[in-house]
Image 1 (spheres, rainbow, N blue to C red):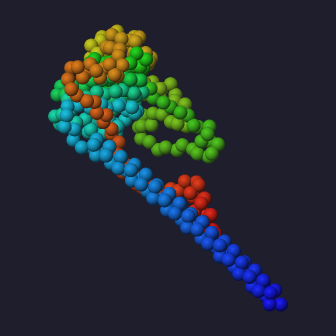
Image 2: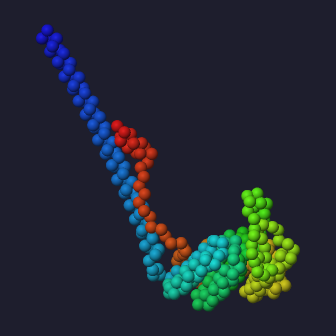
Image 3: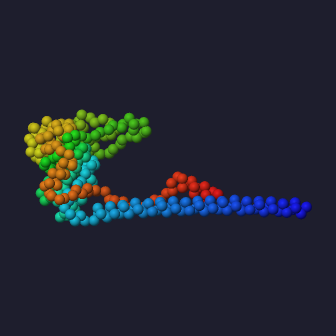
Length: 312
C-alpha cells in the first residue's frame, strides 16, 4: 500500500514538473515574441529617421542660397493658365535678383493653353531677356500657346522629334441638350442684350452665333497670335500663314522657320557651359516641398505575429 501511495505521489510530481516545464516554455516563447516585436518596431523607427534625415539634407541643401554661379532650369510642363504663368513670373523675378543666377533655361513640354496667359508670358520673357539671358529648348512640345510663348526668344533650340506649331485658335463647344432632357434639366436664362449669351450648351450654335463668335473672338485672337509670332520671328505674315493653319510640325521639318536649331538638351547645356564657364544647372520647382511625417507600419509577418500574441 505504501509503495503504491509513493508511486502515485511520484507520478503526480512528474506531472507537475511537466506542467511547469510547459508553462516555462510558453513564457519563453512569449518573451521571444515580445523581443522580436520590439526589435521590429525599433528598426522601422530607425528606418523612418534615416529617411527623414536624407530628406532634410536634400531639402536644406536645395533651399539654402546657392553660392556658386548657376543656370536656373525651369520645366514648362503644364497647360498654360493665368495662375501657372503668374507663379512662373513670381519665381523668375526672385531668381532675377540673385547675382549667382547667370541665365535661365526654359525647357518646354506644353501643349499650350490660355491666349492671354501666353501673351503675358511672351511679353515678360522679352522684358526679362534684356537684363538676364533667357535660353529656350523644346524637349517634347511647344504647341499653340506654348509656341506663342517661346517665339519671344531667339534662338529656339529643339529636339529633332519635338512638336511645334499649332498656330490657331479653338473654342470647344459641347452640346448636352439630349442628356439634359433625359434627366429633367432645362435652360431658362434671363438676359438683356441680344449677344449677352452668344452660345448655349443645350443646343447647337446657329450660323449667326458662329459668325458672331468667329468675328468677335476667334479671328481677333488668331490675328494677335499671328502678329506676335511674325514680329518675334521676323517672318512676314504671308509666309507665316503657310504654317499657321493649326497644323503641328516635327522640329526638323520647320528648321529655319519655326525653329532655329536642332540639338539635344545635353548638347545645349554643354554649349551654355562653354560660354559661361564653370556653372552648374539647378532645376527650379514651383511646387512647395511637403514636410514628411513618420508613418510607421508593421509589415504583414510582424503584424500577424503581434495579432496572434495579443489573442493568446
